Image (cartoon, rainbow, N blue to C red):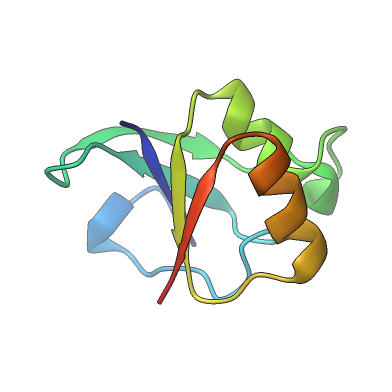
Length: 88
């Protein structure tokens, strides 16, 4: 399982988590044991890219996302793409 966490930098879990899932600078992708698999840049529409953030995550084979808040449109899009959500 690949789990994405919105983060503010390339420090992974040692750095800070982002408040806004779509406007974070990076996504840290971990496995079920918390091992970092990779850190990807947020190249979504919110950061001048082409895709919505959930589509970017799906393209990177993310199965689940852990975040602080998520709006109803993002929840619906994640759900339609098969990405589970945990809001902390």
